[in-house]
Amino acid sequence: MSSAPNSPSSSSPSLIPLSSSYASSSFDITITEAPVDQANELDANKRRHPQYYFEDGNVVFLIEDTLYNVHRYFFARDSSHFRASLRDADVSNPCVMSDVSCADFDEFLAILYPTDFRRPAMKTTAQWIAILHLAAKWDFANIKLLAIDNLTDNATPIDKIVLGRRYGITDWLPGAYEAACTRADPLTLKEGMRLGVEDTVRISAARQVYGTCKARYETECLAGDLGDIFSLDRSSEGTFSFMDGEEKIINILEGQVVEAPVEYLGSSTQTGQGGSNIQSGNYSSVGELTSNQKRMRNIKLQKEKEEAERPMKEGRRPNG
Image 1 (cartoon, rainbow, N blue to C red):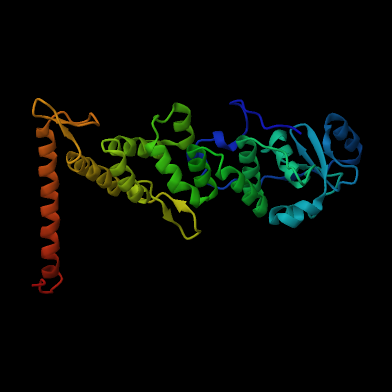
Image 2 (image 1 turned 45 degrees about the vertical axis):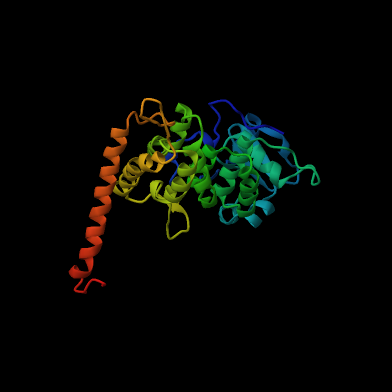
């Protein structure tokens, strides 16, 4: 059985930047009807797959330069896309799939044609991602769920963000974003390219802001703000999507910059020189903390003023 390639040139969907993956993959399949005098020539120029060219197969797929002769039953049973598109297909008219690699299709067929039901073959994360991609593309719901189950414990947080956005796996997103924002190492260039500009900027901003606090404060506040920072808003289709809330996100992050030093002040230790020993290393003097305290106090007073004026604006008497 072929393995999904691990090189950068692999067609694995996990390497595609997120910005190019919001739109669902199109169902690209073409049934070619070769003239009688060209049928033998077509077969001669292509190689038959050594494992997935069954003599009793009744639908032929042409992928790259390889012919697959498989059973229409499995594809029509589990996929509404194939149920319609394979209605007129037969072994003399190959179904050409130009946007699928042989390596990925081999992994997908290994699920449809298992060789050992008791001990399924072990697959890498990249192979399960390839299976997930094709299952989602072709609407094989059960195989998609199988891939999700196997990736849940093995995929990295970055994988889960990219795949969760692309395939609507909403349960992955909050935990994956939190892990990306609180891990010790910053995002790598490769990870940033996979995530796309929006997620890369937001994760980097959140890491910088929440990194000014102790782990306790960071965990409590970040977990509560994840939905707003990363615009995890359910659409009518039930999947998460970005909202138009840049100003709201900026306000949240700026608010944490203000509140973090004040929260952290109570846990800082005093140095022998009379200053504060801020373990995060982001604040060099008590004066800087005092300035932030004043700013936060002014914000609080402004909010209290607005709350007090609201009943009057609405034509109601204030309580008390």
